[in-house]
Length: 143
Image (cartoon, rainbow, N blue to C red; front, side):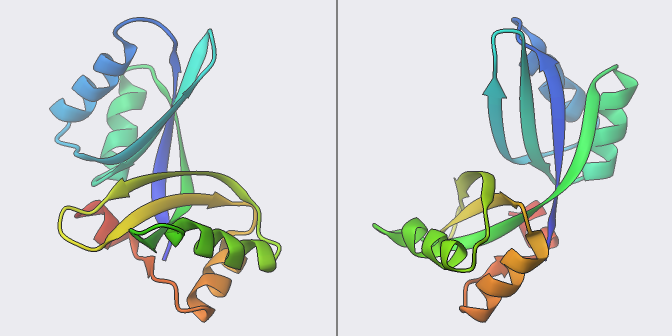
């Protein structure tokens, strides 16, 4: 029930994002979700892609620093307080959210939130016990 995410460290300068997407496109890798956090000097681009190993290899061959981490994809009701309900479940269990980002499925009533937790296994256990849908990586990669 975990999803593989790649994180790419990039210089904060014109053209670097285009270069990353060009490398991925030429490698036949499709981006499913992304998040970008930056400072004045560098950024961290976090991606969910359909071919994680292929993406990591192609980017490393072009000199990018790439890490692979495990995150969790959770279906969240696409309505007011939908996210709040999930966060309250996690808070009650003492699970800390390190970061998160979202995307919306093309066909469906729910949003999908990508979470990074301090206790991934505990978060998955608590969420599934409370009836929250935690998505398998294969489903996320093919959305």
